[in-house]
Length: 133
Image (cartoon, rainbow, N blue to C red; front, side, top):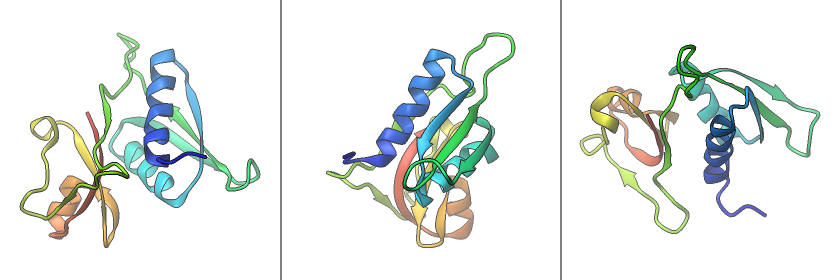
């Protein structure tokens, strides 16, 4: 049993990128699917595919994105912020800026999972799940 599925999600992506894999498979959930959509929309991953028939809840297959010249992953870091033992909540005024605006923070709000920029524009706060830069 995994006590922190979001940390497991980020670790699987980090490990696959360090190993140079093109695709990573992750057990699916609604939250992980929304986080995956954000990673694809922001350009940190190429695409994703939801496989319904694999496992009890299905799996998400994420195609990782690499730089063509250096073969480095599109992201430099995936950092878990809010942990099960210490949740990190922010309001609109104290929304974090990751790497001075070059990275994104994925925030779980009352209006759904979104980036820090979208949360600021919607004037809504929430739980900071992770930083991607």
